[in-house]
Image (spheres, rainbow, N blue to C red):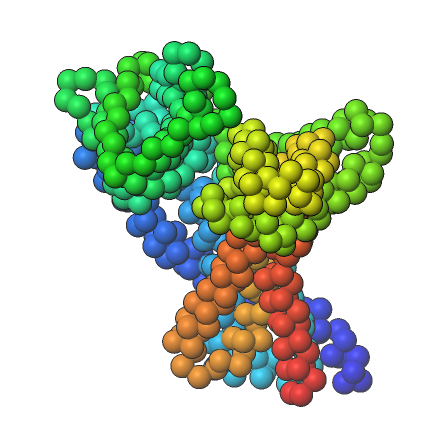
Length: 474
């Protein structure tokens, strides 16, 4: 009779319990979302203050702020889920509610189910934001900032892209406050030759009443081919060089075309780009009348030959005398067509018929047809890692919920303090692991697009194990 009564009341009891848990989680999640969103919004105020100082209209500032919210929400959702799970279950454990539930025959897995179901909903919302809303908002914000009639012409300079300025092409890789680092400039000379300039750091200064900026460059190295069109190059080093750039054409284009970065593409667009790389590799294979597997094997063999070349003593000696690193030498030979320079240096070291010079020539002959494949593999790996990062970070809400439930139940003493500290620790570990994998996004051999899922899988696996221990030993 008792068993029959328990069976009859169990569905009703579970509905009440599930409703109670979901409401508690949802309320705590909403409060955590507000707190995390406000904290992340503080970081955006730096950009807002810069616009205010430039006397930008309030309407434009509000537009920039509006398109910042999708990024804030995307980052806040997983963090809020972690905080809500830990705080709710640590409080339930401290108040003895978890013990009471288990005493009535409800397993810890059934107690965890409403929270996990809620986290799945949060994860799906985050996936939609990450794949569609965030890239569009990011790109729109860039266009708004770019199209501003700014009083600071230097604001038109972006990092990471080549930008044309009359006869110059400028690329700046890094910006640290007012300091620009790793600056590359290509100048087209009157006779058709090119002059390449590299500076370790520089500053941008405005010239009043003129649409020009002054670049103060430091630790500068310039290179250009000799005027007699020989294979010799002229190299000049300088401590400081001043260069003027005309911005009049750029200032006229308030809404000019902006090159999209990976962050600006929707996931669908990124997947199409990855597919296009595969098609291009297939075209290369068709042009060489072999299949894709064959052209990839040829690419692998060419890379192996390059590694063997690096171990040869004459090659090391040549690089040392030329003050070159292997990566620079590779760029010189492949991108800048400076193969004769290295062949001449090897002949000086080991004579006309040296093994190293022959190895270099053989490698160059094999690498030529497969050179573009390396770029496609690198960029493809980078884009696939970005795609999987979006999914893994969006679905991190589920991972935080699974591991947060048992940790919250265990941390029943001083639940608010312990829950908050555990939340911060989980976020730090997940973020650190994700960043560590992203640092190798171009190393396609280790499949970073798969490794990016390690933080989520690690948290889910650990969470299920802890739940099983609580269920088994309680």
